[in-house]
Length: 149
Image (tube, rainbow, N blue to C red; front, top):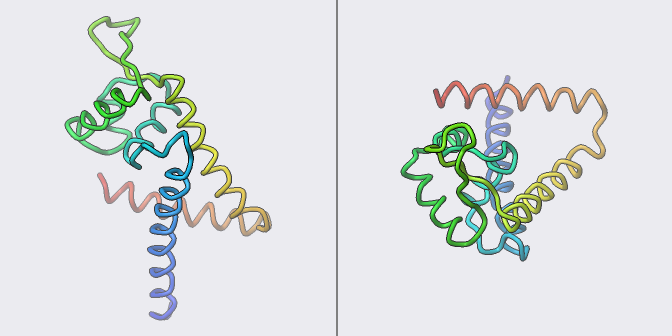
């Protein structure tokens, strides 16, 4: 491949990454359900919303952050009323984190943003184009997963 094409690919990847984050933040800051939340808080709610009640170590592993960093976010979300602490049925010493009604509403608003983004991206793609994009994004994901380890 030509260096010009490689540079274009790099520019597009970086621009898309930044644009997705900026757009997501703007859209969610404009919604009543999520306007008081930071992106870190929203992504923490997302993990809990997808997986259900989790202990802190599970959340931190899925977010790829330290427990001390997560603790700050969890404290803020508790104060704002988006999450609750729940004792585990299996081990009463273990405390799980779950969404409150307010947290579920915020999670669903975030989920809706992603659904609208994906719908807009794929609406005019052929099946073959869609498969190529899935394969390409899978490779990018694999790169980052391997880099993180």
